[in-house]
Image 1: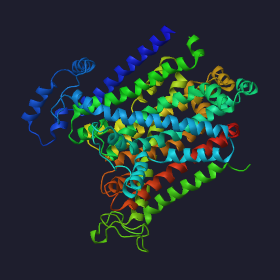
Image 2: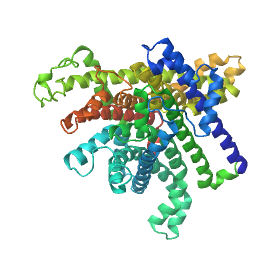
Image 3: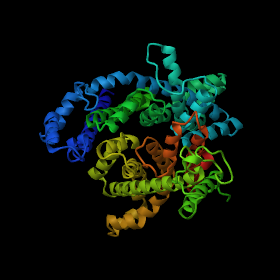
Image 4: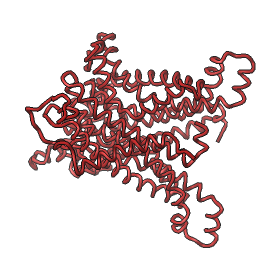
Length: 314
Length: 271
């Protein structure tokens, strides 16, 4: 068991290293001269030479990578070229907003998907099942940013129940939550479409098993059989998809923050692109990719917790 | 045997979208990029069935040309990524050993970069452009197809007729050509259909964020991005492009599901 976790952990660290190297290569080697990207083609030779000196671009690329990596693991991602403050500070300032949005969206997704999926499985072949499947097909086909706009038209423009965008800050928690409701709902409706479908088919598979029949035969209520006996056994595929959806969630928050003008990491990365702030973009992309990999690592560990049979293997 | 319902609905929707895209090559009611500011925000009429936008451009014409651009980008990107991925998957299955391990680890690794993230990197370095959007969408398709092709090809490599061909002295390349590829084509085709849908969504998101199709070229994602600033003034402009995206994605998804059902009737019974 410990050996298994250790092996997964080493794999996880190696993947993180590979990602940081890949991002560093794309951002530092592909453009030829990063100073040219930052300052533009109209810049003078002197200005570029000065910036190269300032950013330490004259050192060999391998050496620069290890220096950047060494600083990054200590929480130093360099100084943003456009904001002229440390990138780590920018990230720390905007992370709570993005985490709150992602957390709220994930919570809504899981609740909605489990309820719909279990409902569809227990009503297999009936109208309710068809309705959930139709919801799922539509949800997969709708871009989250379009759904956001429809929600804004309905709840902000027409009914005026919720704000159409912007963020009032954390001083007023109720107002902050109100600002996050529409964006989180847009993300959750789209994400839960896939998850509800997977939950339904995993549940249908488990409900065919003899232990479910036995549990029913012992006189347990259908709800108890479903939530206590069937669902825990259907969790492996469900958790797998939740892990895979983190990648969608990361891209989803980037897009949705731009739709709702939320001052999170997604907005930051776009401001950085338009300012040609390579140092910030590099830190942000590495961070986003690391979040995706970390989520998958946690899912790997979650398997061991959910399914005791996996612990004894290998 | 009657074809499954999802196949019928899916192929109808796909035919509708592709037909519209093809029609826009030879005809559209108006010039999609022609700006007539005096005609801005016109309500639906006989000359402009879905009205005009904030610059007086005809919405129907923009949707038609947008269909062509969105389809073309998704098609080129997915075919590009699909061919590279399939080739890598076939190579992995045929070579085995460390090559297979390397290809599959590379596929695992590239899953950490969703298309948007990759496009963001390219946009920061080279500036936002259509080419970068295509490269980003193609890139995310490589690991998907590598996995599908390798999984199917690995099964074929264990079959008796492949062992027979091997013992008759046929090389790995010849076996891949004669036996593996024909058997891998079906799952790869199904995956292509589904990935077109993903590609259309990705293109829309990238163009919406300004990382894909650049003005004045119309695309559904860009139309939505324009409409976003006008939600109070002209909410109808946000409806149609989104609806088009939904119909196209739904069509390709249902077509993919339908094709899979035809190829594997057992699966259909289980659903």
